[in-house]
Length: 140
Image (cartoon, rainbow, N blue to C red):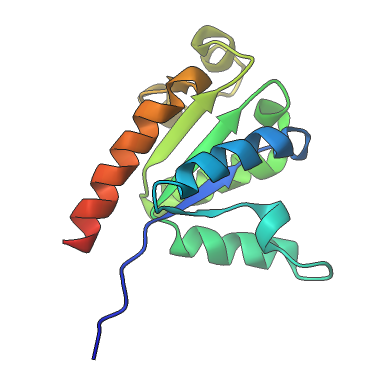
């Protein structure tokens, strides 16, 4: 009997204003054979939104958090970052429309994120190459 293929799941955290950009990132990641979780794609009408978010974060191998002017103001983005941090999964901040200084000098910005290597959206292909390596390590 064939063993089921191991998957690698990236939860994409974003503001609802950034849904189109998040969808483009998800599509690029999925071309690498990596699964993604996007709320607009994976949560059905009437479903318990928060419970589904927590369930997906529990299954995720890492969190990609899209920080934009709207994302940095989203309570859900910060909740998802907190859950991922608590679970100990990698958190990959992707900046779009912000620079690092604008983000980390924000009052109350968590020190745990200041220690992370943040990437600009223009580096997304490099990130996807890293994901391919992670997937290959998980499968082997």
